[in-house]
Structure formats: structure tokens, C-alpha cells
Length: 409
Image (tube, rainbow, N blue to C red; front, side, top):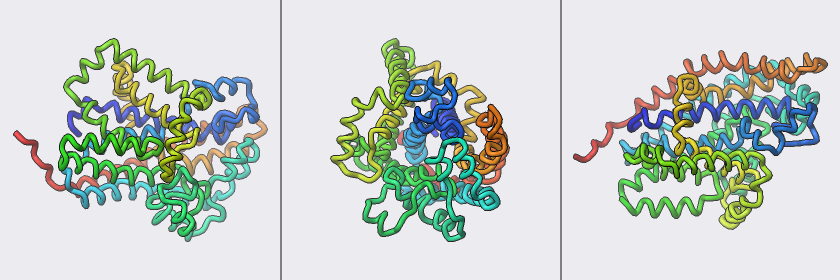
């Protein structure tokens, strides 16, 4: 990556986002009033502080997934630009980089779910998360369903839910795709978008080498069309990539105007995290998404999540203190393990954490005990997964890179 030190804060941002996803899922399972934004499920008075509140930003993993797409748009632009026309190897590298960890996570998920196939069902009924935890995971568990997810739904086609596939409705019906709730590892839905977003960035990088300045016109038009779709976030990240490493970036960070804009972006992100205050401002985006009519287009909820992701990304770019925090050693450590954390935490939530919650349901702090137990198991599994699966996938994908095209002198 060009001038790695100047963009290393993106790794930290990815790490924080992965923790938000983890926290959201544990809240949805054991504190469903918070995780599902459902006031009727409040059991503790303090939960009111997070429901439809800017404080929800702390656990808003839904927006964090959109933040992943923005970060990928930037990082993949840097990765592809040294070899802008290496289309075949670029696609193969993404298949390996995403596919090997995806398969590894599904093997891990089966290892946890086969012995305890219904632990999450009992826990969901006790916690009140009957519309999320109790219906998450495959039922019944079959080898056919597992293989289908490896070779089809979790990577190439997505799932039948409108927000979890980029395929048109007629093709979803013809393929008889299952819903995301039946997945062995629910968070894998984002890899479907990640893969096709990678191909979009690869095409835009090649377009820049062919079309020169006209590339920005093409990208802007594409961004306008995709403004109401997750793929637009990849285009946005691609267009911002040169800005982040531009020579004037240091001056930008020292400007009072840009610092004020960064603070405003943080405030807007917190407002969007309430999933109520920005519903009306997001309405034109939802209307445009409906007019374009592409699969996976935003509804009001996802439009507000996308706005939150964009504002968080803007704050990270514009605020030097935020970048320094994201570049600290602990946050960088989270960034290194972020993909592994994202891939392994969910099956452990459905099994280990759910078993602990059911066993301690009569205790005052059952939700807390279950969360602590699940996360305590997740951390060493995450560490091993990064060493044995994720890091080798990165190494193997890099071996497919052709020689870089030298910069003109």
C-alpha cells in the first residue's frame, strides 16, 4: 500500500468496527431492547439510554458493516493500482482472500453447531430475543445445506433477504435461496457484497488507467446511480483514496475548518445512530434507491446506517486526534484480528454463550455472564483462526500478484 504509515489508521478503524459488530450481536441476543432497538423488551432501566439514542453508536455494528465497505473501497484501490490491468489475477486473489477464511469459518461453525444445534433457541426464548437469536442458525442442520452455503449462498449469491443479495428477485426465486437467518454463520452475508464490491473497484482502477481524467466523471456518475445501494460505498471509498494520501492532507488536518467539519461529522454519526432523528433527511436517499430499483437498495433503516458510516469515515479522515487514536498499538492489534473476529464470533454466540445464558437464566446478571463467557472463548479462537486460516490466505493471495507496473519517471 502506498505510504502505509499515512493510512494505517484505516486498520484501526476496521478493528473498532469489528468490535461494534460483536457488541451488537451480543446485545441483540441478551439485551434485545438495545440490540433490536425495541423499547418493549427493556428489562433494566439503564437500557433506555441506548434505545433510539445517539449512545447506540457504541454498539451499532449494522453501520460498521457499511464502514467495512468504505474502507475496502480505499484499501483495494491502493492494492489494485500497481497492477491495474491484472483482472484475472485480481479476481483470483479476492476469491482466495475471502473464500479461504469463509470456508474456515463454516467448518468452525459446523463444529460448534452440530453438538449444540438448538442452544440458541432456548436462550432466545428466555432472553426475549425470539425474533433474532431464537431463529438464527440452520434448522435442521444438514450436510447439503452446509455445502450449499460454502459454494453458493455465502459468497456468490447471498441470501434471499432483500438486503443480503445483489441478485435480482427473479434469480433469487429461481435459485430458491435461503434466508440469512438459516445461515451457519450469519455475518457471512457481507462477503457477498465484499466480493462484488472488490470487482467493482478493480474495474474502476482499470478505468482510471484507460480513461485518465474521464475516470472521475465515470466514477461520479456511477456513484450517483449507486447512492442508494451498498455498492456505492465502494465507489465512494475508491474516489476518496487519492485524497487520503494526497500531499495536502497534513494541511487539511491542521485547518480549523476541516476540524470543525470532522466534529460535525461525528455529531451527525451519533444522530444517525439513534435511527430516528435522521429518518426524514434520509427519505430522499430511500426515494432515489426505489427509483433506481437495484437489488439490496436501502430502506429507511439501512439508509441511516449508511449515513452513519459515511460520517464516521469522514471524521476519521478529517480529525487528527481520531487518526492518532486509531493508530495506537491496541487499536492496531484489533485491526489485525478484525476479520477473524468478525468470522468466528457468531457460532460461539449461538452455542457457548447461549448455553451459559440458559444455565444462569435465574441469576440477576445472566446476560452479562453469557456475554463474558462467549467473548472469553471468542478471543483465543480468533487468535488461532488468524494464525491458521486468515494469515495463510493473505500470503497465498499475494503470491498470485504479477509484477507491478513501474511508475513513470
